[in-house]
Image 1 (cartoon, rainbow, N blue to C red):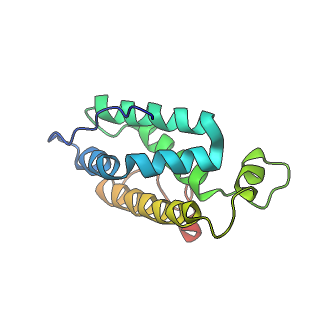
Image 2 (cartoon, one colour):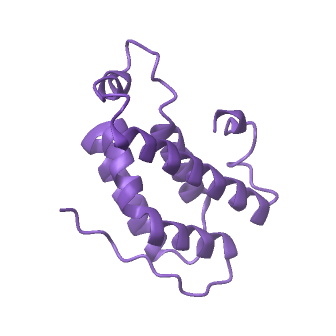
Length: 138
């Protein structure tokens, strides 16, 4: 069992960080599982690092936003059809009727919704935008 870093929803001056911390407080186990299923242990470790950084931050920095976009792209598995991508092979090993597939889809949609909220809370955000994140993918 993986020990999750504490995610506190302490009031900060950054409502985007509060929203992000609240999201991961509720969704961390499922998101970590999705990262593992889609990207293997390395993706899961990177996701754990992201959770730690969120817990320790006082604002939602550019680097945290980049990591959130990476995480969404990872669990959305943009490379499912690419035969040269290891992640595609990992996803292909899952049975389409496996309930984990539906959980991954649900968490991908929830994470997408979080990214949309962050872009609304940080209107000038140059990381989470239609040029950086394909909003039609979710």
